[in-house]
Image (cartoon, rainbow, N blue to C red):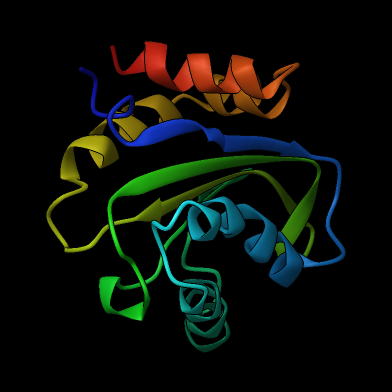
Length: 149
């Protein structure tokens, strides 16, 4: 089974039109993992606090944020969530970000395989565009799973 398929459940993929600001976007993007019992609600606060302290460390390339906090900030078990914000949110002024991938890992090693897949996928900006413009959450889910197959 592909690294992503074992870590991404379909119910954790969503498309949202817009959010009021980046903090609301973090709440929306992480909420499926809270609902599924993969992270504690404090994980959301951890990501937001870290960003206030360190800046938007999770914006890896234009249009892509890999939201994560330290395991001790509320991760319970490994899982990904993918949120596409149609109108984007600005973690950095003037740089709207549409693809938010949330990563929860209960330790610092358990997610290495999936990180390799995500790095390969998002090294190509056209893949970010495909995810950002996908018609449905099902299409996004299939894209992630097929990429890592």
